[in-house]
Length: 461
Figure 1: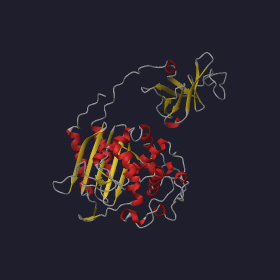
Figure 2: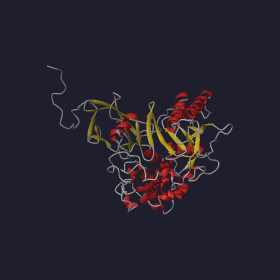
Figure 3: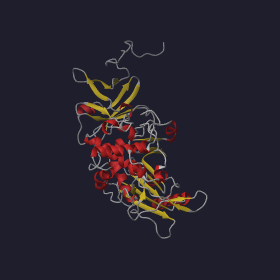
Figure 4: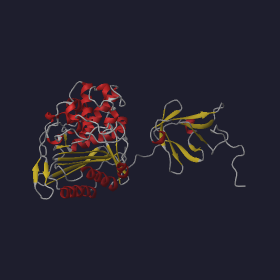
């Protein structure tokens, strides 16, 4: 890798500081801390505070609320990768007796299980978890609000169930499993279920006066997998690197990519706003940039983590107020500042070390009916199919090692591509999910379904 590892330029650092200063001032946050990651390492940390001479650093803990859900999702994906469960399994298969067991594990991860957004009264975020010692106390008498699998409906009880699932399969407490399987391997030593000094206190800021009120920091008990964790900008910056690249000690790059893939049907409002939800991760398109991550809030605290895989940049923003700055928006802006001021330097182009002539033969122009496509051999040995016009169905496809390829994304995700050859070994056509691609539009020498008029192409007579 030949990209520079120098620190950010002074102008970029000042723009980052200006953005969090505006957020802290206009959001009226007692304190706000932020970090920026680029090229897999933390390159900037900044903080603003109302306490003279006492700005928090990257080791001060804040409560991160629902970013906890992303950690819980990582544990569930680990169980899947080990073969202990399948995401298509109904919850009942592994955690019987909940009354909502027809929802699949994937549906709970994606908030499409139909469950209520919150647990029954009293307000669970400001009351002790000891009031809800059983799953039945978290779910209540009417846990479902929608048909299972039909719509995205954010659910804190759904992630409580996923935490209970982890405990059932591992035969250990969620907190202990998280520490041993995620926090310790990733070196997140300042992330914990209970606050560890130094940590910020949580405050409510009066909406119409510049006065503050301390917020209680309750132990959430059964609801912990939905929002219990405390962390720092330093630890969450390292976690962001993991969410971009994976770590074979915890979860492969392929599995974290799966987490970043939309998994829930979008509401009309979400389509308009360019937002979606994957498996424990939020996705949002802002300024032509796809961001993944999560926001979080609990009384006294706000948190946001935003990651752009394409730009190899991420940002974390933490504040200690119940309402105030939009931390995810600020994190997204920090990513944008770095990505636009100091664009990512691409890796040098290099030719392939070798190529199979039978694959190279397939590259170039093809036609589906009369629509032109181009098949390219990419630098990683895969192939890509895209319309010549730039608009239409496109996919990357990975070799299966037997002369066929499987679609990785787009319309042809999961579909099989194969080259159909004539008895003499020459290529007749491509078959992609039953669609016939020919070298010429409606090539009469290929088995085009429905046949080709023997008169051939003609003008108006």
